Image (cartoon, rainbow, N blue to C red; front, side, top):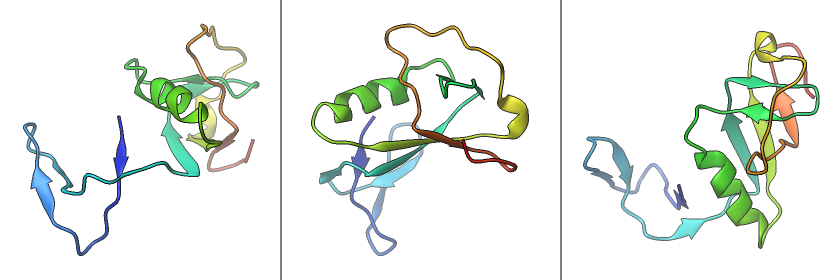
Length: 101
């Protein structure tokens, strides 16, 4: 997973899956990353969708830059404790419709 520079005036290319994507080849590294999740716990551990894309991306970027990670969730997605492994990256914050953790 990578992020590329793009604005509304820039052309998009259709990839092999039929999804429009930026035509730019200039990679960017965000200062803040909004991260999807299935569940999160009191320590801000996150359960993703099973591909590990965000954990791998965050681990790679953290080697050379600080990125603030914010999980986007509903309050019902908070659970007491998640089982985590060494590849899982704890979030800096989680925002729900009711709270900011």
